[in-house]
Amino acid sequence: MGIITKIILTGLGWTVGGPIGGLLGYILGNILSSNGPAQEFINAQGSHRGPYRNTGTQADVNVALMVLIAAVMKADGQVKKSELTFVKRFLLQNYGEENGKQMLKVLQQLVQQDIPIDQVCMQIKVNTDYNTRYHMVDFLFGISGVDGEFHQAELNMLRLIAQHLGISQSDYISIHERHVGRGYSGYSRQSGYSGTSGKDPYKVLGITKDATDDEVKRAYRKMAMKYHPDRVAGMGEEMQRNAAEQMKEINEAYEHIKRLRPGIK
Image (cartoon, rainbow, N blue to C red; front, side):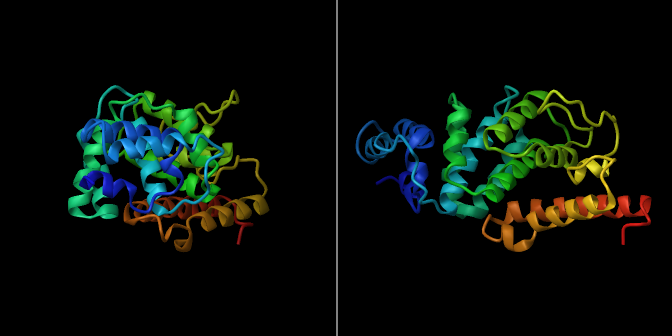
């Protein structure tokens, strides 16, 4: 069995089936051959057309995330060097030096494929909990903005992914505001904060300015729970680092609101 096949197959459960398995099987066929282990992988995924199996591990999350990363990276028609560097670090940390380099080859093949994002997201949705999906979207925003800029095509893809993964509107607004900082745009027909500079602390907490003091405190506690170290402990160093950075943003937003509202203790 080839080294890339071994790396991908190790520890996988639900990603062997469905659209993710189909993408990986096709790529393995391109990288290796049309026979042997690669063909076995393709045959295996063909027998799991859904409902998908909820037998996942962190390896499944990593592979699924890599497919989403490819969809975001290719959305604007170009793969930026800064994005590749960021993703390479993610792969090296999750797979080690040698294996990470092999997985980068898979990613380079993925960005050349047509990715059925609605089907991929549905497969992820039925096999992961909400907290995992939430942090996947948060992490994808971090990749998209690694160079300090957000291309509209990538933002559109991120919004689509969030919708298909079942991320709530308030959570999406919060993630968008923390990363993009240009005000909320899209996700529904309702217009949101339309500022052009700075970040709206209320949007960072996923609430509006007319929220009561109690609602502000509840929103902060809810966000703090999402980013508690225990909730991201098994998600890899890059996702943990992203979570720590986002928690800092959330704390700063809450402190700012507290200064505006002396009644919040």
